[in-house]
Image (tube, rainbow, N blue to C red; front, side, top):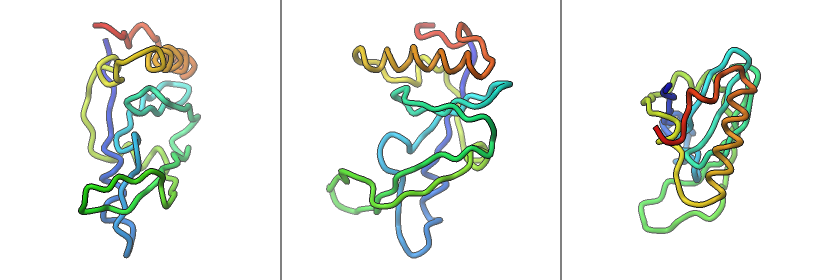
Length: 133
């Protein structure tokens, strides 16, 4: 079983948005990047993902103002795109993919199945990323 690298994408944004105090909106505050010989799979903890051919591929991120109250943003107010190569330089931790992707219901399991097909598309063996290890 191989481990994936999970990156703290929010650390690239917070403090780097000029006069605006912004953070990453939603499930993309952390992203896993799985590097294969034929590209990259980028996924959030729900298994929602996309495939890019190179490190220059751009990852779109929605941003919201950092708040000091209990309010929750419903939609991002800003957008930025950052290259995969910048994410690969962010702080990260390692974890099995099957543990990183949340478990609850058919939608997440369907996302996981599609994620394994994308892993194969970038030249890796999906059996190295079991759901239940």
